[in-house]
Image (cartoon, rainbow, N blue to C red; front, side, top):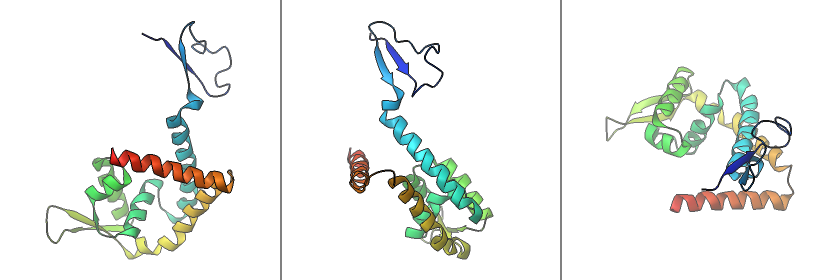
Length: 169
């Protein structure tokens, strides 16, 4: 079996940090070369920036994606929102509970299936769209400004390709 060592990004922990020396004959996993690590850090960077911009409107980052999908199609079920936002159903229930408390959405029984709840935006929820969407666009633009126009288009195209192929697998 191959022995693996893991290298921290940059000089985290210093050059002589315990565990940083690869064993002879081992393979090295460089964290800073990990696609998952880079995507995760980029997503967190963007989420943190957006959270700061949403805060004055009283909207938490966890509520943002729910609002976004409801602005696109009001009346989705909790299960649909959970799938679209890619969070576990219990987390979605708690998020919607907070959004109901904050006056952003209401739960209504489905007209065809009383066991289902449909989530509908309130007037307040709708009113935030024109204020918050430009904030998200500004965060996207700020991140893409770090790249050339061609690099930005390539990044969006490649990420879309990865996600599209993941959905068809």
